[in-house]
Length: 99
Image (cartoon, rainbow, N blue to C red):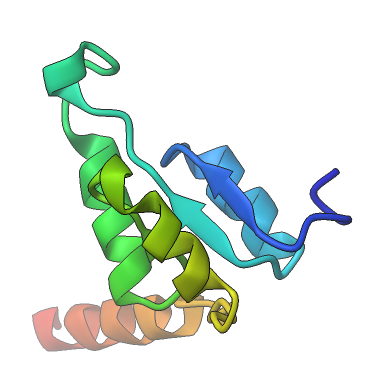
């Protein structure tokens, strides 16, 4: 179903995010919230914001804005570039400074 989808709407589960990115699909993340008893902490909010900031997904932090997020997703193309190289370079730089 993911491969045939034009856009995916999901909670902020890591598996759901990875699956959408692997399939290069626009993703709207609607994080599960503590205040509604949907989760025990706010890690999904943090993950949704991080994915939005990195242009990997559209974060819908207010469900009443879902229609606008859906409209925004039509022109959205996820940044599927890996941050792995940046992380390795940062770690190498940090380790090099410790020597």
